[in-house]
Amino acid sequence: SEGDRRSSLRIKKFINSLTQEDFITYPSYELYDKLRYKLSKINRVQISNIALDSGSDACIKNIIKITSDTKSEVLSNIPSFPMYKIYCDTFNIKFKSLKYDSDLNLTIDNIIKNITKKTTLIILANPNSPYGDLKNIKEIEFLLKILKKKSIFLLIDEAYAEFASHSVIKLLKKFNNLIISRTFSKGWGAAGCRVGYTIA
Image 1 (cartoon, rainbow, N blue to C red):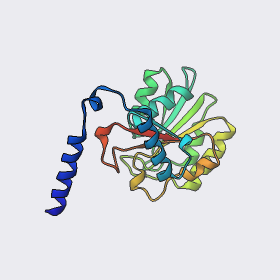
Image 2: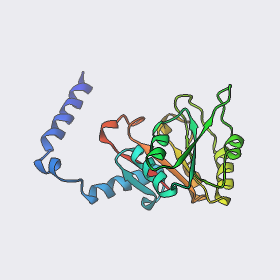
Image 3: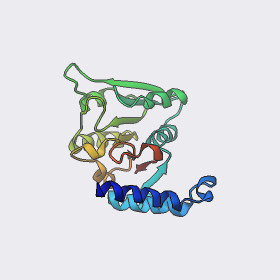
Image 4: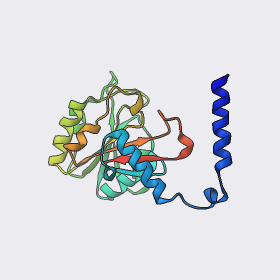
């Protein structure tokens, strides 16, 4: 079809534009900043709110590492993205799983009940895979208010944000203890690019 032909021509044009330098050097900071700038426009935040990394799992690993230590505890919904626990294990941080009830619900009250003095970070995939549950903005805002008083960070993993009815991004203006991770591998279909980012 005509669309396939145009697509094929674009791919050929891109391949022909590549030089040896594209394969032997790290990406330039100029390109890094251009991507951050475009992401800031898409997400309606300042460029200073965006940090890039090699996939959202690397972003998540870094957030765990900078918010927690061996005396800390990280809470997260299970089942979910398995790397949350793996990274906690890597850094010798206690991982506490928040399990769903028989109706496949995990309430905000249940999350709050599991917080201890050692809790430094809560990670919620929102929407979550495999159950597809999605906390609304009011629920997340309520949780953030409680966490802020306790100096606890909330990482919302929005890997599936493009398939959700809403994002919690507008809460960033109210809460400096909110961190959002995003990926190019799901809605953008670009897992091979290994690009993820955080908004905070």
